[in-house]
Structure formats: C-alpha cells, structure tokens
Length: 294
Image (cartoon, rainbow, N blue to C red):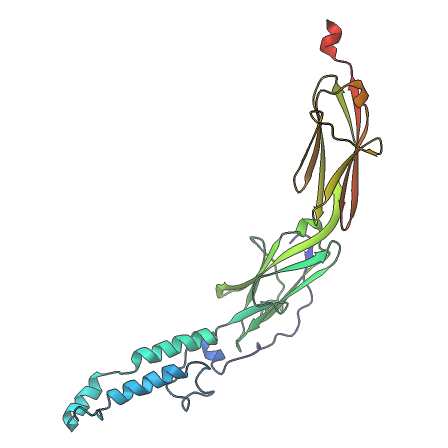
C-alpha cells in the first residue's frame, strides 16, 4: 500500500458483548433452545412470543383438548408421527444465530463511516472482531487492492497506519473484512483536507485576433474559489471579451480575439478555508502573421 505502514499489533481479544451462544454461532452451529430452562442464558430478548407459540402448539397436540381425548394407542401413534414445534424451533435457531452473529468494528464504528483528517497527519485504523470467542482472521483492502498484513496482525484485531495521509488518499476507501465471510465488513472513506495546490507559472504567446484560454489546475479539499487578476488588479469581466469556466479542480479564463492591450500578467488565485494558491500566466500578444504577409 502506497504511503502506508502497519502499526504494531495489539493483543487480540475475544470480542465484546458476547451472547452465551456466541461460540457456537461463530462455529456455524446453533443451540436448539426450547425453553429458558434449557438455555444457558435464557431465551434471547424479545423472542418470548415464540416461546408462547411453542407452548400453545404443545398444548393443542397433547391430547388434553376439550373436544375429545385420545386413547393410549392413539396417543402413542400421534406422538410418534408429529413434531409439533419443529418449525418454531428452527425459527428460534435462525433468530438466535442472527442475534449472535460475528460483527466487525473499525475505530469503534460498526457501520461504514467517513474519517476526516488533514494532509500530513498519520491515520490509525483498528479493526476488531465482535461477538466471537474463536480466532477470526481479518483482511484489509485499500480500494480493490488487498493490504499485506504481517503475522500477528490478522487475528481478531488488526491495525493499519497511513503515515502520513496525503491528498492522494482523499476519497480512498479502506475496508476490513472477515476472511471466512467477506460480506461481514466495515469500510472507511478518507476525507483528507488540504489547501489549494496549483501548477507552475506559464508564459503564453498568442497572435492578435486569436482566442486564448488560460487553464489553472488547482486541487483542494474543501473546494476553493477562483479570482482572476490582471497585473495584480482584479480583472473586470467584460461581456463578449472574457469567459470564466470552472470545475472542482480546473479554472479557466478565455479571452476572445486578443489585442496588444491584452499583454500582461494574469493571475489565477484559488482560495479555500485552508489557504491560497496562485498561478501566473504571462501573456504576450504578437502581431498577426497572416495580416503581415498581406
């Protein structure tokens, strides 16, 4: 990874906020809890309505209903054929597995987020496995490229450092993933802020009656605003003579049919809350060669 080095790995933990079935869920197993008494930690919170449904189905099929009572042989036959709570138990299992599924967090964020910083500042990202008591291997990606992690910095907790962050890291996404299930992931978008960075001064030569465009490339975050000067005085934009165009990184001044009086130094000044960048264009208007030949 360009401009990045790994931080020293910290001692891997076992995860936080573990559910009693965390270990089983992490291993792909799910305990078939039927009642709170059979569960090591009681029924999962909010699932007591499923327990009531299971108990009601047991009651309806137990042969103690008010309509009729089954004989002993019929009772044995019915109980051997029916599995009254199979579907609810599977549903409870599914919900328990979801509730205790492995999760990741990056810098204490369990969902994707944007991290703002200044250019030249080191960034540390720490990915932690949650809800698992087993060893879980982690992966880091910078965009689509996988980051090379050292041994000892891959299991349950993994740290990377971008040192220092530069303007080329602005907008880049870093993603931590669980190796065994890469749909379990958390992404960080870097918002690296830096002052306007303009290119070097230029000398521009043009013939009379020709159109001239001065292009100023200036990257900045947050985006800057441009002001044009001629010989250190703010340029008055005369209609049908000057046109200004700009994007987030490109600022242009077009002059229609230049004349000798357009000679001078034009300055593109891009200013943001973090600073100012300036680029000078030394415009030299020469005589029209085609007209001179006539």
